[in-house]
Length: 120
Image 1 (cartoon, rainbow, N blue to C red):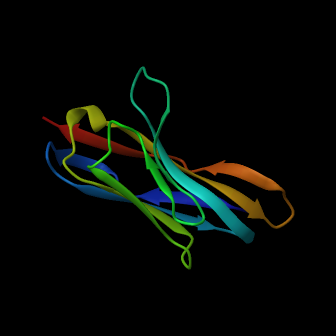
Image 2: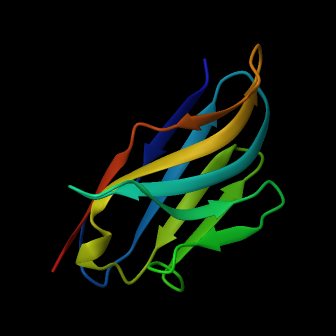
């Protein structure tokens, strides 16, 4: 069974930093793009950052220059380094990955989410 397990969320003061991790486990053949989304209370889930299998990254305008996404191809893990955090970054952060797992086709998988709270 494929699982995406996130870690690294928490409470931080404005201007601080956090690093989120998301490890993919299970019987998989390959992982294509990986990314981080977030959902604040009362708002729709939005894409924060993504990284392709070749390492090409994209960011939402709201986090450009402050957040950095990276991945470890051996550990099947994606990271989100978040700097200069603002109260408006407060949300539940979800990782996702396009995965080809044993016995399945390519499919979008999601983690359970990790809470990030930025205090002013």
